[in-house]
Image (cartoon, rainbow, N blue to C red; front, side):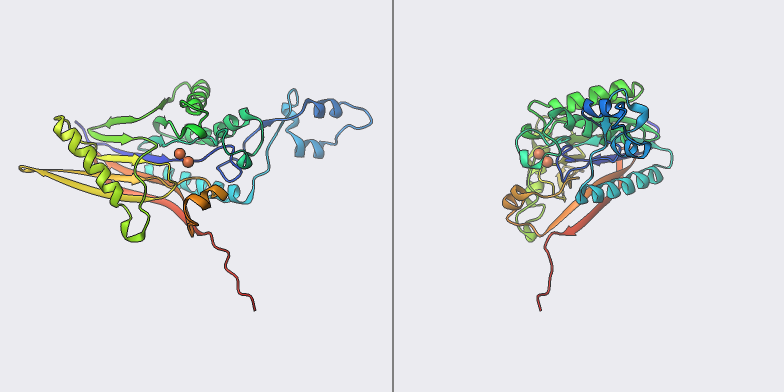
Length: 314
Ligand SMILES: [Fe+2]
Ligand SMILES: [Fe+2]
């Protein structure tokens, strides 16, 4: 098999529709038809400048508006745009594979986090987030892993709806929703799912559970007479971690790696509770440089913020 270079680009947990989740400035949400009527009203008609603020006059047969981005969303967009620029540079014209590790929308459970109360807006926000992926030059295929039930309206609804619409808009792109993937690409085996091990509850335990997890999965596949995955990708905890394991049998080493994905979403009140007031948050994406059936390098394009409010009271 001829060796070729590919970039596997992985993102996760953008929670579209969450006030601290990824939301593109290109998002367009339906507005009230009342605006349309007012625009045609002789006494109360809008000026051109006012219409630009409300909606694009070119689309005035049905009104849309661009929701205002909150501070964390502005930050995430800058990070996302930087990463997509770096991805195009790194790929240098070689094939790009895209994996989304779940929670593409915010879902119905945590109402206080919603951008709007209209459920359909979450799919429109997710679509606007993912059109730039479909427009990447050299995109070979994109797979969307199912997220947590409460964030995807149960049974993978969000991934199904979003990928169906992306497929309609970009029929030439190989895009599909999946539950738990086992993807073989040029001999490299990738096991990808949303749920998996946690990152570890103490600094000195980081990656411990993850290494036990892949040790178990590797042994199970070896006992079945199958090659274990070279790369395991998991998400859900919104926290970066990485671990490796090596199993030697006779004269062969089986080496696997696991990466836990950082999110593209901020922390809410519930998040502070379940993380026991974590002091930092890491957001971003991963880019795996693959040559033949080997991972040459893992580029961690993340940014870590301190969540504590530092102040000196004099
Ligand atoms: Fe999530
Ligand atoms: Fe999740």
